[in-house]
Image 1 (cartoon, rainbow, N blue to C red):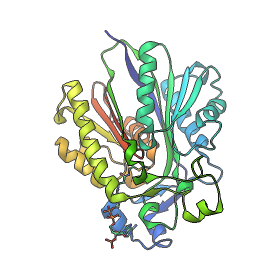
Image 2 (tube, rainbow, N blue to C red):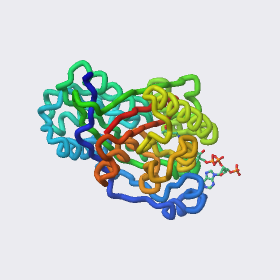
Image 3 (cartoon, helix red, strand yellow):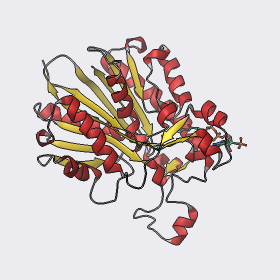
Image 4 (cartoon, rainbow, N blue to C red):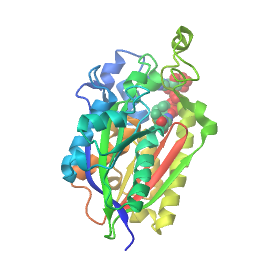
Length: 327
Ligand code: ACO
C-alpha cells in the first residue's frame, strides 16, 4: 500500500473579542441586514494588541498537538500559511517553534493568502510521502484586522482573526490525502491586494494617506473569479479521484461569502448538511478559515472514518486549490 498523509490532530483558536454587525453599524454606513444577506456574516473575532498572529497560531497548534498525542519535540517541520505575519522577519513559524519548544523542527511561512493552509498542507503531504515517519505541524493563521480599513464599508465587514492547525504524518492504511491541486494567476493581483508597507511601497506618509497599508478589493470582480476557480478546481479534484459530486461527504471550503458556498453546493448537487458553514461566526479569516472549519467539523463528530472530504480555497494572488482526502 503506498504511503499516504493523514491528519492525526486538529486545533483552532480565535480571540475572545467579538465585533457584531450591529457594532459595525455604528462605525460605517452599513446594516446588519445588508451584511447578512450579501455575505452570511453575523460577527467576527478581533485580536487585541496583545494577540499577534504567532500567539493565535501557537494556541491552535497546542490543541492540535494535544489531540494528536504528539510532543512539540517530536515535530520535524512547522509550516504556517499566512499573509499577516507578526513582522517581516522572523517568520510566524519560527515564533511558534520557540513558543512550543519544538526545537527539532524546521520552520517556515508560506504566503498564498486565503489558500495558505491548503498550499501548506500540500507541501506537508509531499514531505510525508518522502519520509512517512515525519510529523508536521500545518497552521493557517491570520490577524487581518490590522490590515483592515475600519472606515471602508466594502471590506471591514468581511474579515476576522483566528488560527487553525493540523498535525500530519504518514500511514500505509488506505486513507488520508488522495490528491492536491494548486493554482495561481498573478496577472489578476490588483483585484485583491495590500499594496503598501512592502518593498514596492515602503512606509511613507504618502502611502499611508492612500490607505495602501489596508486590504483593497474589487469585490464583485473577485467574486466572479472565485466562483469560476472554485468550480474548476472542485471538478479537477473529483475527476482525479473518480468521484462525482454526490460522493463527497463533506465540503470544507474557504469561508469568504455564503453566496459562494451556496453556488458550490448547487454545482456539486450537495445537500446543505454536506457543506460545512461557520462564516456567520468568524467572517473571512483568510488562511485560517479552512483549518478552523476542519477542527470544528472534527471536534463536533462530523468527520467519520472513511468519509470523503473535499477542502477548497480561493484568495488574493489569485491563488486557489483543493485537497481531497479520505478521513
Ligand atoms: N453596507 C451597505 N452597502 C454596501 C456595503 C456595506 N457594507 N458595501 C458595499 N455596499 C454597497 C456598494 O456601495 C454598492 O452600492 P451601489 O450599488 O449604490 O454602487 C452595493 O452595495 C453593491 O456593492 P457590491 O460590491 O457590488 O456588492 P456585492 O454583492 O458584490 O458584495 C462582497 C460585496 C460581499 C465583497 C462580494 O463581492 C464578495 O464576497 N466578493 C468576494 C470576496 C472574496 O471571495 N474574497 C476572496 C478571498 S479574501 C482574501 O484573499 C483575503
